[in-house]
Length: 221
Image (cartoon, rainbow, N blue to C red; front, side):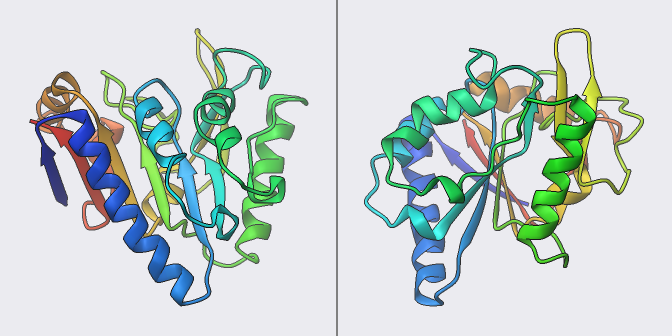
């Protein structure tokens, strides 16, 4: 597991942008596309704003989501809306390169449709996103995979998650861990401290089950 330590969120974002551009230009040189799984919550807002400012061809990049709350895309609680408002609407990218988790049908249908969309994107072969950006909740959850989740090790692609606050749709831990790069975004000292405390608490915490060989932790120290 690679840990990137910076003193400020600005420095952390600058490092992420450097790393991202390096991978982007490598893909472009190879004439390949780059698949990028976005995260929700408030932690990536400043990162998204900075990403929107970089001068690259966004049309060789495909955007997906790690999870979504089962709410309208116009809701302030929507992960899609946050990414769209802070990032996507500010860049030149074709709509066909943006793959939101839809919430306009039953939750089971929306989950099944996203699974099919991902399968089709990878031509029904191994699902391995290039970039999977993750935030972390104070309880150590990632995407919408929570502690003591019964389906932590299931081999699904996406699945509905029923919780008291919101119903959700999430990628599986398996799909996340198959990504080429997993980027854990800990953009303040508090989250960094929580992560290392949680890290000692055992395997039932989802963040502790990330593929360590593929995970890069961006953290404030």
